[in-house]
Amino acid sequence: MAQEVVMPKFGMSMEEGTIVEWLVKPDDEVKKGDPLVTISSDKITNDLEAPASGVIIEVTANVDDTLPVGKTLAYIGEKGEKPEPGREEPQEEPQAQQAQSSSTQTEEEPKTNGRAASDSRHIKISPAAKKLAKSKNIPLEELTGTGPQGRITKQDVENYERPASEEPAPQTEIVPYAGIEEAVTKTPVRGMRKAIAENMHQSLQQSAQLTLMKKADVTDLLHVQKQAKQSLEKDGETVTLTLTSFIAKAVVKSLQAHSHMNSAYIEDTIHTYPHVHLGIAASLDNGLVVPVLFHAEHQSVLGLAESIQKLAEKARENRLDTSEMSGSTFTITNLGATGIEYFTPILNPPEAGILGIGSLQEEVVMIEGQPQARRFLPLSLTFDHRVIDGDPASRFLKDVASALEQPYQMLL
Image 1 (cartoon, rainbow, N blue to C red):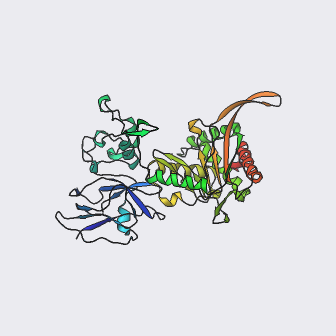
Image 2: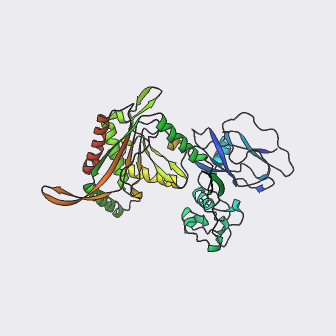
Image 3: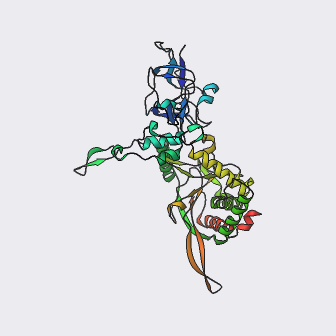
C-alpha cells in the first residue's frame, strides 16, 4: 500500500507551508530518511524526509504551492503501484512522520574519497549550506565537506572557488519601463521573505510608531566585558560574553521598572505582561528571524549570554522551532556590525517597543575639565504611541542607557 507524504508540522504554531523545491521526481527510488522536498513556513525552511523506502509514484504538489499541515504532497510505494485517494481535509501530522522531518541536516553516505556523491539525495549537507549553494548556483557535487563525517557546512560553500569560466550569468528579463526596455531581475516573494513583508507592512499600517534616540557611554562597560570574558576563558568556559548580553540585561531590568514598555496593543486592549520574553533579531542569508529568550528576568548576564549564543547557533543552522520564535514581549535588533549609528527599527507586532543598537562610536568629551576619549553606543527606541506616550518612553530609554553606563549594577 502506498505511503502518503504529507505537509509536516515544523513547530506547534505552523498551520501551512510552501513548497520551495522538490529534491526528487516521480519514479525516483528513495530510502527512508532521504530528503524529499524543501518546505518554507512563515518562520523557517526545512527539508522533509521520506517516511518510508520505495519509489516516488506520484507528486501531488507543485513548487510555490502553499498547503495546510497534513495535506498530501506525494506518494511512496512500489514501482507501478497506483496511489489511493489522499486525505481531503488537513490533519495533524502523524508523530512518526513528524519525527522523520529534518530541521537539522540532509544526510546520507558520502563517497569514500571525502567528495560529496553526485546524487544530491546522498550528500551530507546542512540546510543553511544547501540554501547558500543554491543561491550561488554551486553544484553540490563540487563541494568538499569539512564538517563531521564529511558534512558540508556553510563555510565550505563560502570558501568554494568557482572556475572563472563557470561563473553563472544573472537571470534577467527585458521589460519596458518608462518607455525604455531594461533588463531587470525578477524574484518571486514567497516563504520567509513574504512573511517578513506582510508583518512589516502590517506593523506600520496598524500602529502609531515613533522613534527616540539616545547614546550611552559604555566605556566602563567595555572594560568590564573584557575582564569578564578573559576570566571565563581562563576558567575554560565556552560561553562568549558579548556586549549583546549586557544590553539584554539592561533592557530586562528597565522593562521590569517600566512595565508599560513590556506591552502589546491587541484588539483595542493593552496587554501588559508580568514576565519578559525578550526577542533578539537575527539576520540570515534569506531574511530575518527573532528567537525568544523566555523569562529573561530570571537570567544573569552570563545566563543570557549562553541563551543568546545557543539561539544564534540554531538560527544560523536553521534549527529553530517556530515555538522558539513566537511569544516575545519586547525585541532588540542590532545593526552595529554594519556601521550604522541610529535608525528607526519597525515594531515586531503586536509588541509596543523595539530597541535598535547601532555601531560603537568614539568621541572626545570633557570630564572635570579634562578631555577624555570615550566610547558611546547609539540607541534607537521605537514605540507604539497608542500604548505609550513620549515622556514614559524617554524615561525607559534613559534607564537603559543608565544601566549600560553602570555595568557593575547589572552583575549584582
